[in-house]
Amino acid sequence: MRAERASLCELGLLPDAANHWPLATWLDSTHSRPAHDALKRLVNSPLGDLTELSSRQVLLPELASFAQHVAWKELQVLAAQVACFLSSNYELVPQTVIERAYFAVRYRDIVRDVSTQLRAVDALLTLSAQVHSRLAILSADSAFGTVVAAFAAATEDSRREPLRLAVARGHTMSLIALDASVRAKRVPAGQHITNSVPFSAVLQSLVEATWQLDAFCSLATASAAVGGVIPDMVPRGAASMTFEGVRHPLLPTGVQNDLQLAANERVLFLTGPNMAGKSTLLRAIGIATYCAHLGMAVAARAACIPLHDRLMVSITVRDSLQRGESLYLAEIRRVRAVVEAVERGDAVVAIFDEVFRGTNIKDATQATSLLVGGLAKALHGTFVIASHFADVAVAHEDRAGVACWQMDVDVAGESPAFTHRVRRGVSDVHLGMLLLDAEGVGPILRRMASY
Image (tube, rainbow, N blue to C red):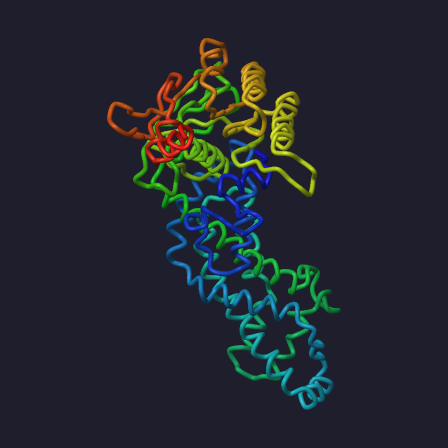
């Protein structure tokens, strides 16, 4: 699956331009800034292969348990220290005895710091070996496999042993003699061909792997914390999207809704008044669908989700002064991106909230009706459209490929009761004037108009 960053920001899965990240409290339990950045890259890398997804679904629960036994603070501090050391501009300590002795006299502060940093390298390798012993028994998809391989390469490298022995002896001159073999960007002359990769590159890969491991464990922790279920992932076209008890992951006690689409239903057209819960339900569907493609559990009791090629979300489209786009033009271009992907044959999950709200009611109604009719004919994909245009829903209620759903509202009492539950059908509830009067605005305006 592919998803534009804008779509992930709309769902709160990634931070927006203002660095507002609604789902960070759930997703991000990383222990350093580099790991935080690695998590964002991981979230932005959904899987598109059922075999890989199956491996990830097995891996994440194992990682959630593994993460509780890692000395994260020590590991991340050492990784940061080693990263700085590898990128330092210190001159390499000479390897010959005489030159090294002269260097030690002339650059005592550098020698002291280099010896301290080499001990940090050894400490990182020692701790990483303990981590790797647990990692090696876990399941792994290809992306996580590179993390495990980096830990294995560093902790099993033959150049680790001389460093370990030098640190154990505690002799500074013997220790700094290894500086070139650790920090050199090229293999020093005379090293065995099996160590043809510079040790600095092996160590840098280990540092990056510690950040990636933290990111994977953060994703695993979020998956376990959602209190949901591992979804059934099926090939595209093999089944329709189905949720039992789906909810937003930030609402653990929120209303749970059941949603089912028939095999030939492409468009879920959702009606209901403001405050009924349409936007929250759209986000719940989008988040669950995308997280399923990350191999995570979803916030539901049960779920069946077909593999999709793209996720495209249009919930808070805005006009753009810089691009010279009105709101309506921005909406049109968003819709165009979706229909062009559908025409290419992509299996698209597209989510629209009050599409075409940037134009007049007549044009918006006609455009929405045209969008529903066109997407209903798509060979693949799932299209969720929330709208106030109940007349569009009525016109398409019996059309093949369209499923009409509504947010239930109880209007029997003096004020509406929002159940936030969804059911089949078209909403005929109109609350605009009722809410205007409930807030006291209607009576004031009527009084003013009578003067």
